[in-house]
Image (cartoon, rainbow, N blue to C red; front, side, top):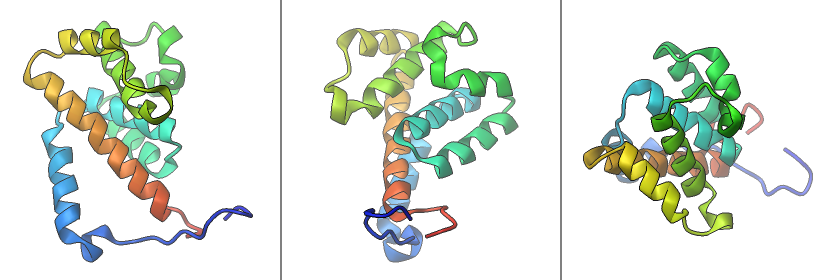
Length: 151
């Protein structure tokens, strides 16, 4: 733990508030996209949030889903990489906009429109939920030091 940081304690959300855990797990299941894309979104949001626990977990799941390790390495600079499809770029742009929301303001209309076009109808709803879900898990993990060995 760094000096000046508030003390953090791991919490077993399943045990301490099973209803909340089930609700968040249900939200996560509702945001199902194709596995590789879903994991790219989760890794990107986790990295933006500084959640090493979730980022590592979802990077492993992305690799198991067949993701190329070089694409995972390029994810931090996806805007200047040619390794991502237009659809993936739309999802990553929306992930960035929704994850950085507290400091950047509402997502730009053009980003939302591009994602809505790339993910029509229910797919767009699933993408929104997937991004919201991983951001919620990141915040819980960061607040409770989930997965940290020094917690």
